Length: 143
Image: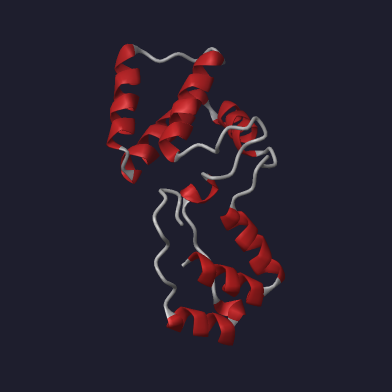
């Protein structure tokens, strides 16, 4: 299942065959939602992109950085859109506004902790790194 609860589409046989034939030439690309089922050390799930930008905004405010009403409305408007371009714009603007040191501190606090609960997908990736046959078996079971 994917993070929204839908079944993962079947893996094409051609991809499975290519992986078995030349596993060193296959690259796994995953999206930001991969970690949504994992839990942070505080028990909370890792944030979606929209949640991450909102957390950054609240955290920056708690660090003494404050936005004007117009700036807050602009960020909220971008977050409501929720598309990648809007989220890139909102997060980039916040990063530039608060500066690299505060941004790095926020990102470190948000993502540096070892997950309290690891998702099945992460277990699958770990198994894939250890044993390709086991990973393929698990992928087939999820599909």
